[in-house]
Image (cartoon, helix red, strand yellow):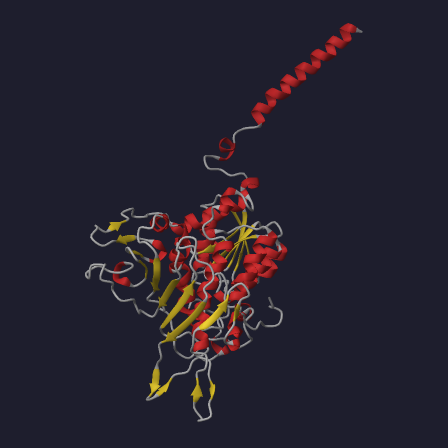
Length: 485
């Protein structure tokens, strides 16, 4: 019996040794199996794109991280769009293609995350549909079309515990750390005034919307899906893929296009939150003598918008922020040499923070920070940033999606909705001022009274203009049946 037991034990030991030896050959390093940089399917994020042309083409390409992640589905209302859709389909030939993002999300529960790069008016409805299915989302700037939508997305991201990022890639620019450090070190003292500006619009704006004409509707364009939550109407020629920006039904004007890039710099460095009020004036066009053109459905050719903020933990005095667009720039301060551009090269876009001890300026995306102080040599950031900021910004979101909600990678994102939501609300607060500026009604003399041309007081936490009820219509929008939020 003892000899039989001994033989059994020996056989068992030999089996374990052989199994262990075999396992050393089966469990190999991943790079040996797939090559250097190989990611096994279980380590890859399954990504889809809502909006595959225009900025969507680069967004999904960046999210794929040069093929390290799996792009399993693409969606666009223009399947043969020559604005990048065709290229996206060539880049990801194995990805299933859809025109309706709702169908795509329903058919692919395995999707982990989506990029959303559509016209402004469809950002929120696409993001909400994705987050309701617990998908991580990357949404192009501005985050939403109106303030209510921004608040909904911000709160939903927390509730659903999904990883989010807005596509204002300048927030991932290391140059912004220079500005932040200058502010934290009180290099320019207390800031009381901030100027932010752009040369936008560079698309049709300040003119009547083109007339609808269904005879010009391209065969490949799904116009009804393009409209999404907007009111039903016949096809508007040439508004797709880019010229929608100038009309409020679909876009958010120059402020919405560039504000999240430019206002981001002082908003971040000074620790701003919701503004207290807004007031504005807009450029006016005259097609007839003494009769200003009245185009309330569209953004103006130029505007000046002033926002006031309370003091913050980083700045002990209230701050006035002045935004101008349409090529209108602030006055050149004496502290900056007269032959130098303010902001970026040519002064087309820029930020200028004026403190009681000096001035900080940057270009768009926070590039080229400069520090001016009386009697001192100008400090210039000489680090020419050759980083692909769009790739860095998107790839960091992908890594955070893999790490999970509230992971260090997630918390280190520079534009998750906890930050991007209030920033977007501030940008869109300016648009409430601009749109209210054009509110009018007949007066007793038979003329028109532009009754909302005043400082609008804002209760940011309750999303409400408290001294002009009619302005609150612009906090949200009317949604087409079936597209309600």
